[in-house]
Length: 141
Image (tube, rainbow, N blue to C red; front, top):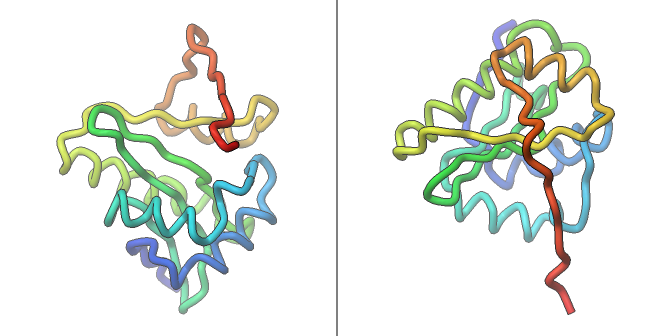
């Protein structure tokens, strides 16, 4: 059975959110509500992607850019499809799309105790930046 990688659209949202909720190491918040994901996809048209096998979603990743840098969020692959190149195929497609838009560097955020996730990223050539600290501020009233 072949896995197909295609653009993430809102028709994939329910299956993607279910996959993310079932995946260890994925932190979800209100930012991942359907309206917010739809806004993200519209703002970053064609960059995010899913992997499907026989019409069933088996992987998903959000990809965006700010004009300078690319960012990947929520890469997840169903346990039944891990270590089969699905995650790498999703990432490769995102990176190619970013390069096509002139973006030369991409960042990811990995939850500190997500050891399996960190192993994946290292194995696929990503390096941990220990000189940066992520800080957040809530802008809602």
